[in-house]
Length: 416
Image (cartoon, rainbow, N blue to C red; front, side, top):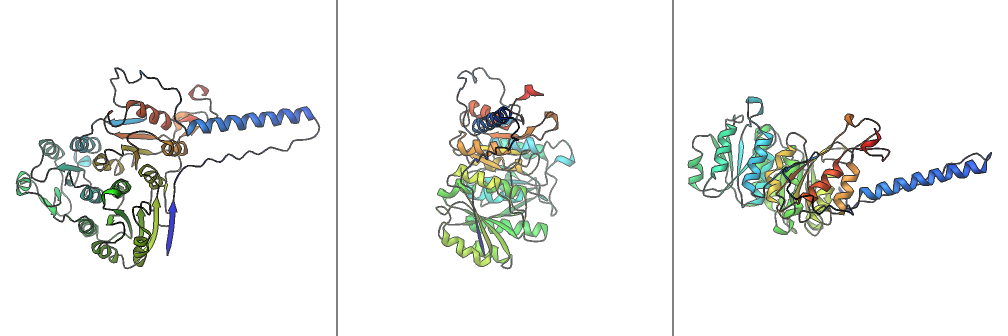
């Protein structure tokens, strides 16, 4: 059985109803009708303003700015994946006492994006730990210092460090003071299967739902949004090629006894119809897709399977959202723990670091509104992962304004 879900854009439909009025006074009827028309025009104007870019920018807004964060958008100000991972770790795990120390730290070679995304499944409880980056032959000093600061408590089997992929002996030597577990596989599909098994061994069962994403370079940006969901929930990411399902992925699906809920992430140009058909042998297939990486990430943020409870379902206000430039996808892996705790935020990819029409439309659907008391919320909050050279201060300011709570009447904060 197969279900296809595509969310390719934002359509705003305004339905204008003209109320029937009494015939006792023609002038009163005309006045009433005129008032309705004005209200309708005002509403249309407000909606149009919500989903288009600002027309009048202040060219000097970023001059001499001291802050990196705004009222609704916290920026982690770096484009270095190693540093972003440490910044994220320190934000999510202060490690000031036992209750906010991690269980195990996940170490991933920074050049292996397929391993990085799939390993995010281990961020989730009960492991409860960040991804930090390493090089194949050494653990950078920054990463070592963060491991020491975190002082990981250890998982059920005592592991404090989980090393992903095949690394040099020097790496393991640097980690000799910790109890280390390693998943040595380097083939993306087999590695993802092994991570799936590791999580099942820890928790005692395989989750019925899985995400299928591309392991190929052209599919990278379409697969990237999976990293936030699998760090948030138990479901794993399993890999496919465009026109062929790897044997390792089939083996992992068979562990679900033909009852898997299979969510294909990406359009047919990335994961073909033939692959979708092959996957349907092992369970129910649902495709979540958008035509561009930005639209695809928004489609996932909005998607919810009410029957299985899989998906974010962000169609109303009151959420956290991470933003990453499409030019720096490694930062999304580093920032995945923002989905694990705190605001539990999915990631939206900004095309070359800029807000585009699909982003404006998405933010319009989740913009909070209040009647007469903004202190009651709900509130949105954004996490901007990247430096101002990747995502400008101007873009940050636009996102901050679009996440702000506003008055239902359109009067702004001056109306309360």
